[in-house]
Length: 407
Ligand SMILES: [Zn+2]
Image 1: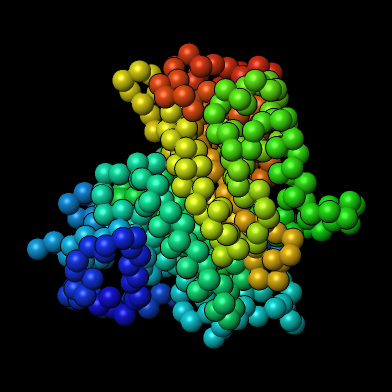
Image 2: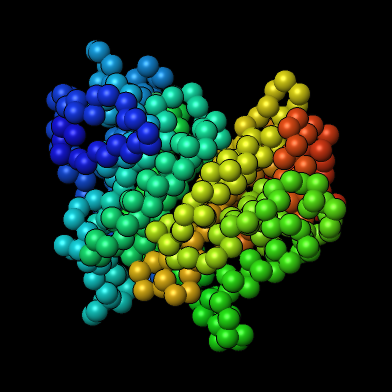
């Protein structure tokens, strides 16, 4: 790109033309400077990136920086068309050559551990179609995105200083998305983030107590709840024929399993694991890759059918967070997706307020088993109805909460 950033096109089949088109914009190189600081009370790393205040914020559709370039309107992507494109974020939270400034351990000053915010922040454009969503992609394209995630993971995870490669998608203005164009991001992190650090501890505890792997046991237990379900079945009928009330499994494929976690934090939260544990995208075999698009698109489309009434479908805002084993923890940690929405009903959002933001203690208004049932129901086209979408969950309190009052 004009300012020296890297841009990569991924194609399946015949690539669109225009790959060699140069970025002709008069862009100055940005010199991002960020810092990571460790919270001495919790050990969590915080990235301070003040330069990001200047980043593009809700541009009009005709100025979208992720659409292909056209005459008179040059975007981040010089080509006139593309399938999947990945480029370095112009306003990254983390930047610089990983490894050149490793995060120093706390030495003589245990209260103020800090280092430069080195790492990589990349943008993954899923399609050139500005108005599409991931759920609208065909299986071929979803597979191409998987391949792009895999390639980025392979490339970034070996950079010195990178501890974890995190692929994610934020979808919807309710999540805080500032660009409407369908895209995700890849962060090469110079530290192990708090949620992963907790999983490392829990996996070690489980290993010490049982001699087994935590994630193996987790997936096996959820799959066991659907009994003798035929392994290649994705139909909700066969699921509901077994234990409809208490199974949390949403989709059981031959190679992947999606379920609402036992202690779900969000109104609708689904974890998707390959049945065979692998540390990251690079560990998936061809069978697992081949089945992935069908499962993942099905899951996203179920989220899109959760809310709305008849003509007015309210697409669920969501975060799709791909957890991959950090460096040094490949033996115990498992690749998996944590997909969740902040939407509780067609007209209510879950806000993180006093308990969640203040104490990291989640209060979930939707029972996980109910959420799983809903997600199985909406697998049938047209199954979403306002009556079920907003039905109060048995066993929960009145849902006018502090969060509601504060809105
Ligand atoms: Zn666009």
